[in-house]
Length: 578
Image (cartoon, rainbow, N blue to C red; front, top):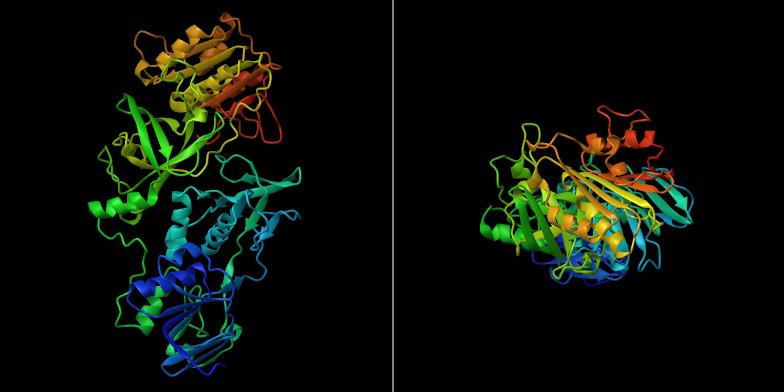
């Protein structure tokens, strides 16, 4: 043991998310001497070390912890510390833990250990705890493109450092966070993992690597050679859920800083609940939340009417490339005002959080000088959004807030676009392509129509859009202009509530022979039909039993077309995230 002791108020063993949280929280509470002892060459979130002026000893392994009297002696293989309190923040994998989905033997599926050489690789991290955030941050630092499947994650149960890092990864568009999705199947596809999700809105995605963040368990005093009276004096703490026995005092990462301060530094007022310290609903707090959460600017906001808008968003970080038909997520905070008088359930608990929703990416038909638009090459994304009204059963959170936004306002944009509802099945430029939509379901079709015309598709292209009133057709003039310019493009608007027009639906356009009168016969061998909008219009069968009333899928199936399913390609394609 080294002869000279260095005095500290708190020594944290392990630069984990929970360990960093305790170190930062105690420092911000006024406890001046805090040391983090890390056996590796890096802590979980290296970018927090500088701004928070953390004192970290890298490459130090604990030899012994001796808790005697009013102090604790921590001996490592390099130094010795005398401290008022000690936190063992390292944890180990839970024995017997298995991934929540069956996996096949592969060098591309990993548990806990980050694969080497993952720069520019697509990596899926699976987990919903601090450890999953740690694995995601490490992969991002290594240069990977990361998706975190965090189904079941409760951000309030993350440590403050874990929650802050998760927010940074999203804000800077360095990772995609799937808060409601987990894999339910992983198969081999050409030597790479193909992942299928339990959320039907998520397409199947292929990755270079899949990394499972295992559940962890609390270390025991014997794991760090602890002696003395640390348990009785409550000077030595262990990161983990509260223990049922008196083996050692424990607390989870989101509470450990407060527990240590209350027990070991009762004269200090803890600042540990969150690193944001947003406690008041004033303009300063709102400005801080906007700064920390929003990563894009609304550049265009054009109402078709009071409840229907076309808007464009420019991201601060990353690009805006997309395949026509894909979608992205938009978000606003619960702290933003609503245009209606509805009350959000549990607003006090949600006030500092984001509301995220997925929207198909739309497209201008023509650019500012009258040519076919090329929004894929620009720096903005266009969306076509309708305000969702509040009902006794459901209070929408996002669109009543979005209604008050204007150009120049800030917004959250998800890190990357996604979706397999694309033009990939259309390979013959002479084939028939039909788009059927209700309301804003035409959004993905707009970008797909433009893409086909830009590529010189010369087969018939038909876009049918059903709405209530003429005013609900936000792209009416552009579609009509295209139909005049291109002989192979046909636009069929179907308003259902105009007094002087017979009520008809998308199903009627197909059944009544409207396409045949245009000279278009839906040949099953040369046709692709794309459906987006009201599920009742689409009519997806459940175990081959079609719903009532009759939807378009049933009508097309009777005509010889087939529904495109995973592993069973067809020519009826449905946008599933609706």
